[in-house]
Image 1: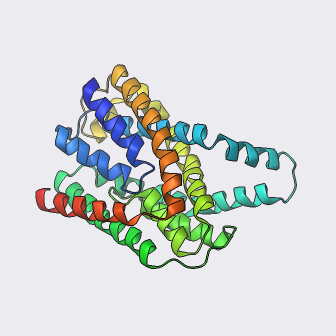
Image 2: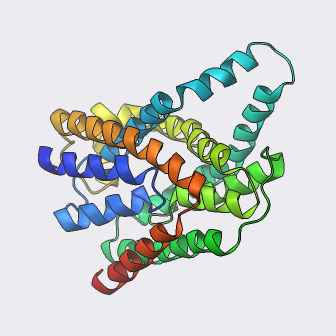
Image 3: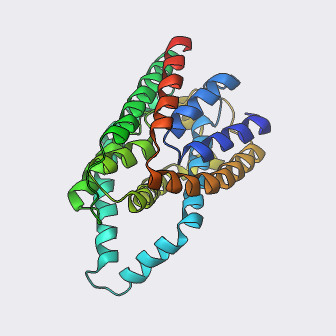
Length: 274
C-alpha cells in the first residue's frame, strides 16, 4: 500500500465511520478501486484507521466522557452509572459475535466476489433502515432504556458485516425505538469505543511486527509501511473529527434519508460492477 493510497483510505474511513454509509463497506470499495486485494497489512491498516476514529470520538465528545467519569467516581447509582451500564449492555451482542464468528466474518473480506456481493447487499439494507427513520418517527423518550441499549447493540453486532453501516444501523434502530436524537448520536459513537479498542488490543502484536503465520493467514507477503500507517491514521483522525460533529447535527434534524438514497445507489452499483 502506497502513502497516497493510505491517505485516500484514511480519509474514507474518517468520513464514513460517522456518516451512515458504512466505513467498512467504503474501505472495501476503496481497496477495490485502488487495486488493493489481499495486500500485506490490509487488516492492520483497518485496525489503525479505526483506532484513529476512536481518538476522534474522544476529542469531539470529551465533555460527555468527562461527565461519565465524574459520575462514576462518585460511586453511586446515578445517571452516569446508568449510562455506563447501557454502554456495557450494548456491548454484549458484538462480544458474542466477535467471539464465535470472528473468523467467518474475516473470511468475507478475502474473497473478492463474495466481498462485492456482501458489501452491495448490506449497503442496500442500510438504505432501507435509514429510509424507515424518515417515514416512521415515534414520540421521543428522554433516556435510553437498558432493553433499547441491548437492541441497539444487536444492530451494532450485525454491522460487523462490510457494507452494513454501524452508525447508520445503531442510530436508525434507536430512532425507530423512539430515543432522543441528540443523545442517541452520542451514545452510538461512545458505545463503539470499547469494542474497537478491545479488538485493537487483541491484534496489537500484529500491527508493527506481524508474524509469518499472520501474514500467511491473510494472504500477505510483506507488512504495511510505517509511513502508510502514520498517514492513514492522521487522515482518518482529522476527517473523523469533522464528520463526527456533522453527523450529530444531522441526526438532530433527522435528515438521514439522503444517505439512504446514496447507500441504495452505491449498493446497486457494487452489485452490478462487483
